[in-house]
Image (cartoon, rainbow, N blue to C red; front, side, top):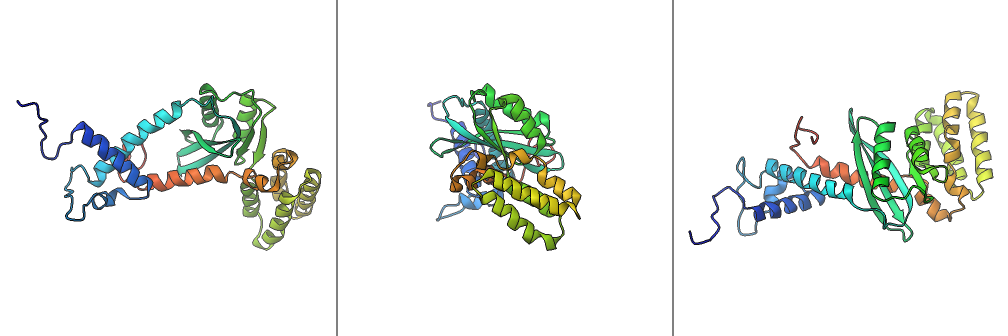
Length: 287
């Protein structure tokens, strides 16, 4: 025994496992499927064989990504938030299946920097799932006494949980894109263009009172033929024009009147997880 490390073909040392795991994660984050992992590690002068059970097979790469991403998520969900000067928090949900929803929060500080804050899973975007997300943020240092702007996708459970956790000082803006989409889905196509024009004009106004009047007039006209749609327009009305009432600059209002920032993060989650071919349990979702 001369002290040199003994390796058995097909087995990995701890250092190699860590290196391959980080490589697998990096490749998937840049949209390389696990099925192409073997080709991605191929050298110009040759190839890396990838028989079943090898260290670069799609199943091995998937297992590494699942294990390493789970560890990173645990660290992420425990990170201290008390030092962040967050002025805005966006919350949105991502439906991955009939019984799996991810609800995420992303914060924006005074310099405009974006900070992914938390991610929880549940069967639906119900009160329990949302409350678990907010409780996690508070336990990690997000001061509930500091006034902030919360931007949500329109789920009622979100607004109720935010008021319960952060109090009446929390300003809530419902996503205008979600609101317009919900209205259009209930209207015949011939009414879409005119309704969108009115909503867009209201969103762009600097005067909240004039914007409210415009939307109320729209609801009144639609109420004659489509009373359910009119009620949908006015549902949660107090939270539709929050960014206007705060007298934010127009360009800033456009960014903060919807949940696009959170949705971009959710899109990345959807894209990356689609590249994993082997999950525990039922083969499609993590344990």
